Amino acid sequence: MTIRGLLWLAILFAVAVALATVGRFDMGQVLFVYPPYRVDLSMNLFVVGLVVLFIVLYMLLRILRNIWRMPRRVAAYRARARVTKAHAALRDAISNLYAGRFSRAEKSAREALADAGNKGAAGLIAANAAHKLHEYGRRDEWLAQIHEADWQDARLMATADMRVDAHDADGALAALSELPASGSRRIHAQHIALRAQQQLKAWGEVLKLVRMLEKRDALHPAAAVRLRQLAAENLLRERRHNADALLELWHSLSAVERHSPRLADLAAELLVVLNRPQEARKIVEEALAHNWDARLLRRYPETAGGDALPLIQKAEGWKKSHPDDADLLFALGRLCLHQQLWGKAQSFLEMALKLADNEPLKIRSHRALARLHEQLGDAAKAGEHYRESALAMHIV
Image (cartoon, rainbow, N blue to C red; front, side, top):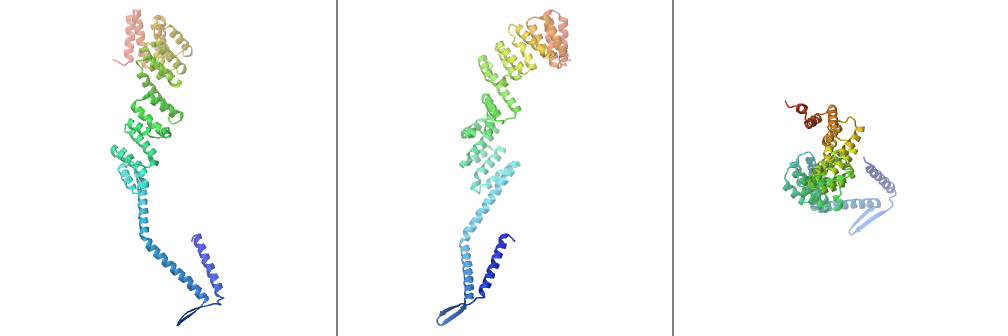
């Protein structure tokens, strides 16, 4: 028994005790006269009769009121049952969607529309399920049915997400553009915009979005590095016919991007092709000062232009801190070849060949030595090095 039941029981006992106590003092009489009838009652009996009459009348009125309200109560019960069923269907739709049962999810979402309050949530679930089934027309119909003001941000974000997933980048960006300013600054919106701009190959926007997401710690560092390099590479390649535009872009990049060996190597390669070796040399030297990398050392001799002596002096300075770097020795050998310093070139190339720890460097060293001996008129040694380079390539 609950506390409420115990309280009522105590009240009934108190009333019974009070009635028993008062009933002992029955000194009054009640007389009803209606000629030729006469009714004589004790006061206690009259009071009890009044109480009983009140209870009977109250119960009759309650019964009549319940009968009068019965149609409305039945209608309310049916409405509650309908809402309960709609909410259960909405829960089933969510469960089926994340379980991968997309047809069932869409069907349950349609049943959930029996309650008008579920229209926004059910529409998004059904649209997502139709999208997963590649029913893009039906997906857009579901989204178009969401008119509630409170659900517009969710509708636009879901539209953008699903459109970019279906490689409709323009549609995704159009949906994002309808969001309020605060909505477009959300991390999820920026992630969607980043994917859309990648699909459109708008590398300037990609680079800007990556930097924004990095500042908010919303992008994995490895993914950020890869995307920054990808965007910068493509921006550099887009300017491969204009050295001034390429250099302007290069100086607009962050220090981290300019010091990337991969990007510095590409920029130097493009500038060498555009006959701007001095700028290429500066790019390579700046990158090497922060990241010692073999590909930059291989690119360095190509930035010599007409005079390789300054580069030889710079590389010999590096040799003091990297005495056993085979790639640096190979670069020095190539620079000496360019400057026709045959003896130093042969010495550096032979040292590079001796210290080389990978097949590509051995092949390049043999070929450089072969060209050197050709210049010196020693065909036998040149042929020997060509043969060794072929054997290093596993050619029978």
